[in-house]
Length: 215
Image: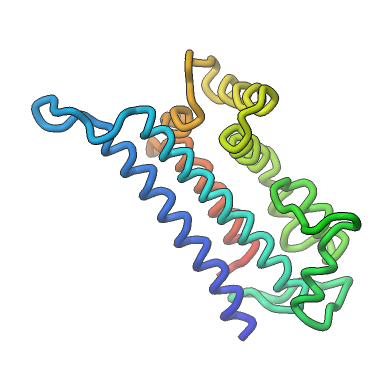
């Protein structure tokens, strides 16, 4: 039962990532001119919008994977492969496990910030495993993923500035009028084989997820 539940969490996550990549790939394909210069099915603006939606869905899938696996591990369940983590707390049921993770004065626990999740894991599991080592090793790229998500979800000056810093760091320049979706559709420099930034980031959270829930 325990293995089936965590295996289901991972399977649903992987399926969501595949759907996100297909959506972004479709958006790119539909934005290309047709045969003999025929008009594309969608504009570049809509392509970028669809790419951003795909990225948001991938980020949401990551949040769900982290939250649900954290709760199941705290409840004492094992991953499909390997041992259950050593716990410092022993909730009697899943509902209690969920309640214990909610900070005082809040209605829910947040799972967007890798550092906060890592610190939470270190309070509940020995050495924070399996979360802390994975999140620490991927802290930089997970921070980028979160900031790019914020730039899509929040149209604030601060979110835009943080996104533009990522672009400069990754591309060495800031192309004029660059949308978040346009950046995500850009080929990541040095990637072999060539992949878009969306594919690059999705691959990173995919690997992190499978380290958290080994199968």
